[in-house]
Image 1: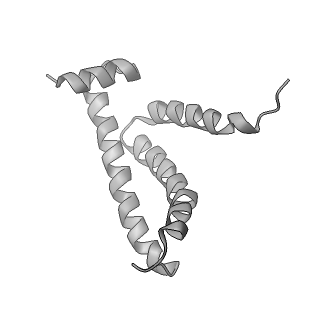
Image 2 (image 1 turned 120 degrees about the vertical axis):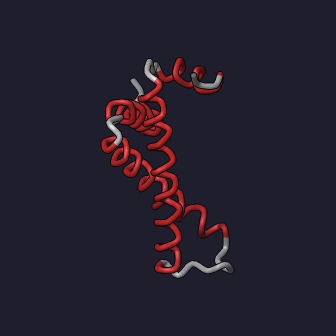
Length: 105
């Protein structure tokens, strides 16, 4: 059986099966690993070195890598059979980020 932390996450996320839980964990691991490799490939192409200021690297990371990570979550979520879970989380995140741009009545 799963550890207590896994049971808490399953409850929080509304997941009933251990298999689905571990497929979601696998999806996060695959997406995270892929992003680190993508960053290592693209950073030199953008001309970034160890001397490049963090004030340049961090905004670039947020602008390029963060959306790529979201796409990777959807791709790997689909491959692991967890598309619905990740699509639900993606929609919630997009609503959160869109909130400041909505017109107020």
